[in-house]
Amino acid sequence: MTFTLATWNINSVRLREGLVERLMREEAPDVLCLQECKSPVEKIPLERFRALGYDWMVARGQKGYNGVAILSKLPLVEAGAGDYAGLGHARHVAGRLENGVTIHNFYVPAGGDIPDRDENEKFGQKLDFLTHMRDDFLANRPEKAILVGDLNIAPREDDVWSHKALLKIVSHTPIEVEHLAQTRDAGNWVDVTRQDIPEGQLYSWWSYRARDWDAADKGRRLDHVWATPDISNAAHGSRILRAARSWEQPSDHVPVFATFDL
Figure (cartoon, rainbow, N blue to C red):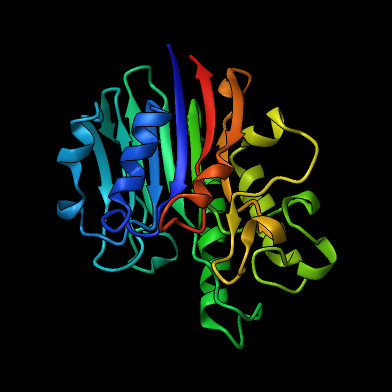
């Protein structure tokens, strides 16, 4: 079976349901993982998505913030959801396809503006969330699995517009990068996007604060697709839909794609 998967921080699925429908029509991924849905599950406009062939959904929601959902054209059953760092937030849901592949959809906390856990509780929560993920993968080594989502960290120097300028900016600080590396290594995860596109600047997020985001191009790669080693070689065709950042009333994130032959 060949299927294409996309991950997208939509920044309110109800506000931007038209953009989700546009992606479904124009790109038609078989599986679409959304983060920051900002909606209770029962208010996600599933009927509109079903009309486009997305008959299956697993999700966790909250009113006004957080929230993760996996929409699928392929049969999908729920495979759990974790309360990482005990925050009580809707930041993880997992689904399993009929071929046995488990898809984990994560929305890691952004971490606030100050990269110091003593001065900024949110930054500490972000690090604790990643530590909990790491420990979970060490205790339950994933197999035949894909992990996607807004991980809110740009790990490589070429995942940001300026490594030097962002070293003390939340999302690219050394301690965050190290925590993410430990989390990835704990599950032996392979960064599929960089497996397919090993060199060059690569971004999936551009701030709303930029007057002309495209010209300034001060982006970061915060959105990721990982796979376990037993299926990572089946991945190909990774791409980032930069054009979506110019859609009407866009999210500040854009979709990231990968295709798997499994």
